[in-house]
Amino acid sequence: MDGAIARARSERGELVLLRRGDAVELRVNGVFVMDTAHTGTERELAAATLRAVEGTDLRVLVGGLGLGFTLQEVLADPRVREAHVVEIEPDLLDWHRAGLVPQTAGVLRDDRVRCHVGDVAEVITAQPAGSVDVLLLDVDNGPGYLVLDANAAIYRAGFLARCAEKLSDGGTLAIWSADTSPELRAALEEVFGGCEERAIPVRLGRRETTYHLFLAVR
Ligand SMILES: C[S@@+](CC[C@H](N)C(=O)[O-])C[C@H]1O[C@@H](n2cnc3c(N)ncnc32)[C@H](O)[C@@H]1O
Image (tube, rainbow, N blue to C red):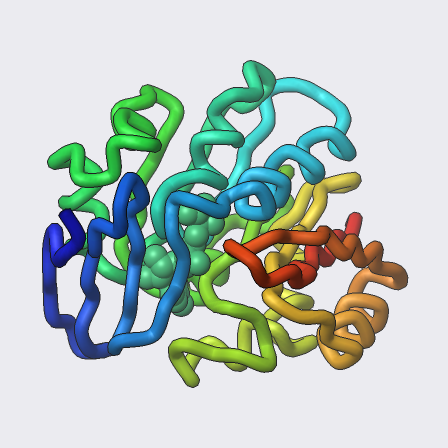
């Protein structure tokens, strides 16, 4: 049966978790954010970045939680010592804890996870310099398709420079985007001196599209 599993209101609007067949879907203000049927690129955001990072005792920061697939992939790497997850919608954390997203059940119970409720920009700004090895950002659809206008600054050079300052030497920032973005690429190149863009083909039902990961190393 299809229908709403949970609903909440915050200052940003309405958050809804829906059942669609076997899948669970997240919507904000009626806009599709993601579902549990197509999660390859959310998982690859973590997997590709962790493959590129050396060392052990890794400190990872994930923003935001969404349906939990990026975090689940982070936790699958035994080298991860701490996984900080930042989510702006407190109700979403409660829904995970209540088991409403069975596909990623238990991610918040892992001992390595530290939850932060708030804006990822503020939480990152509050971190000590050099304290993060892997920074994974998937808070919106990308700079060209924002669900929340306030997230525009996350894709600009000023905030990306703050991310660079919080990364350890050799630490990596990776950003998920629904589309390519020459502006984001240019901002990352300006701040980090380089950027790798990976275009990943995705099939959404009958539609084929490409999602993008942007990786930059400090
Ligand atoms: C596309 S989902 C993340 C999907 C996630 N990668 C996964 O694997 O399920 C985006 C999430 O970021 C949250 N979010 C949006 N803006 C945010 C911000 N500025 N700071 C923290 N979380 C934010 C949303 O509420 C939503 O849960």
